Image 1 (cartoon, rainbow, N blue to C red):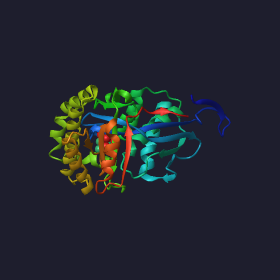
Image 2 (spheres, rainbow, N blue to C red):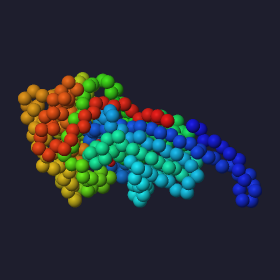
Image 3 (cartoon, helix red, strand yellow):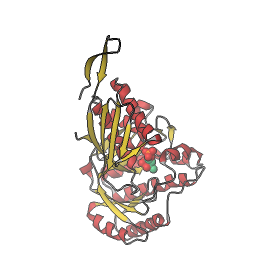
Amino acid sequence: MRPAIFWASDYNFKKVLIKMTHSTSTSVACANIAFIKYWGNRDNALRLPVNGSISMNLDGLFARTTVAFNSSKSDSLLINDYAVTGKGLDRVSSILDLVRGMANIQEKAEVKSENNFPAGAGIASSAAAFGALALAASAAAGLNLSEAELSRLARRGSGSAARSIPAGFVEWQMGKDEEDSYAFSIAQADHWALMDCIAVVSSAHKKTGSTEGHAIASTSPLQNARVEDTLRRLEICRRAILDKDFESFANIIELDSDMMHAVMMTSNPPLMYWQNATVGIFHAVREWRGRGLPVAYTVDAGANVHVICPSDYAKEVEEKLRELPGVINVLVAGAGGGARVIG
Ligand code: PMV
């Protein structure tokens, strides 16, 4: 909706022009799993990454966010019905500030967000949340942003959220500058019927969030080697997705995940996200693949393992994962669409 413009009187009874939106919009955006990981920024404030990344949106695992610009005195935030203040609210307000700047409005906003996947399930909820926020806030402010503009805006809240805007299989190019660092689809969701069987081994909130992790990535002596090799891994992963070549895909995503965790473990201070059950799943997945089952693992900044397989094998993989020690639950998701306005 376009912002309405009202003439109103100020205290001196002079006519002043007040731009008011009083608009509300609701959007949904999927979580995503990175196949080639983003780890480390060249600009932490702008969340400009040191390397490009590739991911798949996760169908059915999404955040639904409503933004209502109104006449309240400050922004407010409810996540899954809990009021959030402090740093969490500041992070949301900084996205709202960018939107207010673009739309040339001043109103504060009420933001309500819900995840449809269990809280603490170890799925990066920030990508879905900031993807949905970028779209809902800009729509409520009357802006009609392009996919690239939305992806850039979502990036400012959480880097990986840039990838939750476009549909399906998505690449986020590191870009030359701020303008140029956004994500786009490399294949639609129905291109390849891959499934992510997420083995949940911990529902505890991680002690070190990814924002702090990105900030210390450069302290690892392995980070330069990881970054310098990224174009090669991106190329192999992109090609494997386009050609639906599972073997090449499996090898490159496991290598990429292991390289990122090697950087995390050798940072100062060191970050160890894995637990015993995490490593147990790696061994099981490698053994199953050795015996001919098309499966591969990848892990984001947490202990839970994303086990990827073609959809025909998802039931078998899910059942096998449930039998492994330490697996509390398994969530299954296919490739999902892009962020969209629903109201
Ligand atoms: O978007 P952030 O700041 O939560 O960082 C995400 C980092 C990883 O999930 C570990 C990798 C990725 O590319 O999603």
